[in-house]
Length: 267
Image 1 (tube, rainbow, N blue to C red):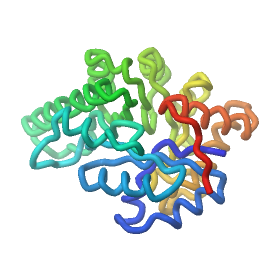
Image 2 (image 1 turned 135 degrees about the horizontal axis):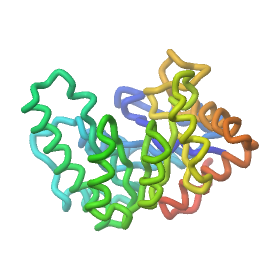
Image 3 (image 1 turned 180 degrees about the vertical axis):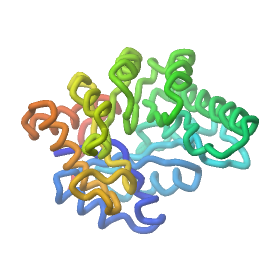
Image 4 (image 1 turned 180 degrees about the horizontal axis):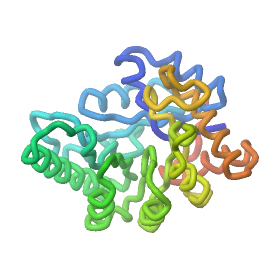
């Protein structure tokens, strides 16, 4: 039994019916999914899915690269996150990778806007008492510094799709965060990721797909789906010299400890 701790059901279906993805995941031994929002429209969809499907949970958040006419303040984020099926705030964080090609001034302005948005998400998470889902790409030092400055350890959360070195993992672990690995860990050239995946303590480890992106081996090249988190878990269990069942149980327990819930019965 596994949890896909980060997927995008709305993006995987183009906003349509995700029931086939949920059913395929259950048949693959993945009855629990965290469906992560990236903007306001996405938030509405993932909350609806979480109410429709047993074992599916939702987040509220605005991706660092999302373009909004009007930013959400802390109170608006908290209001959205009051829904009983929302278990986390995010994904939020910093991403300078997708802004390549902008002028130096545009890059600086965009990063400043991302930092303001990021801080609001952390404040909302602390206010409502729900963990954060952190996206960080080409922004490691700024991400960790803001988490530290804003007291994000009071909320805790997930470092999603972790691709950094062990020193970075330790800093996140010191803040009480869980480290989640995606299909990238199965890629041949991901030596740094594999090293971190072997060293993160088992009680702070999670697995994810980030579907529809980052499809793991042996399905690389195809569209990703939550069912494929099984391949991430199997690879990581072997990497760590563990039995797959014990690894799966541990990561599932980690997820529900983080969100403060008991695993629901899935029909």
